[in-house]
Length: 98
Image (cartoon, rainbow, N blue to C red; front, side):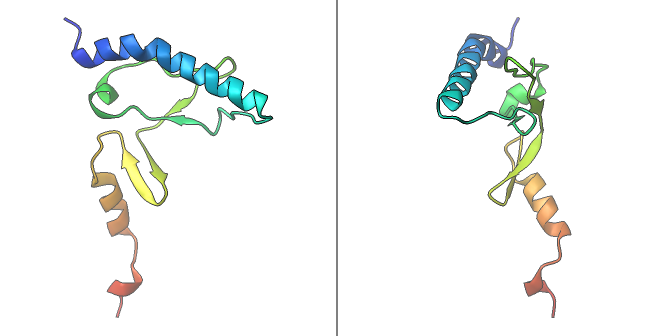
């Protein structure tokens, strides 16, 4: 039996590919370029445990990451604060030093 999350992924995978192609087409029309070497993919929630194929463009696959920093907040694929808090606790903070 296929898990519900994989059924959802298989159902929406073609729409994700269509969205990426539309994004590439839009960027080309607006004299912009999607640089796949700088583009990352992160799968969130229960799908993160599944062995899903990488998102690809016509030129390259995108790198899949389990965490990244966005606007100063470390986000991970489990959608918890664990990674952010662990990194924050390792840094020295000015207000903690006398």
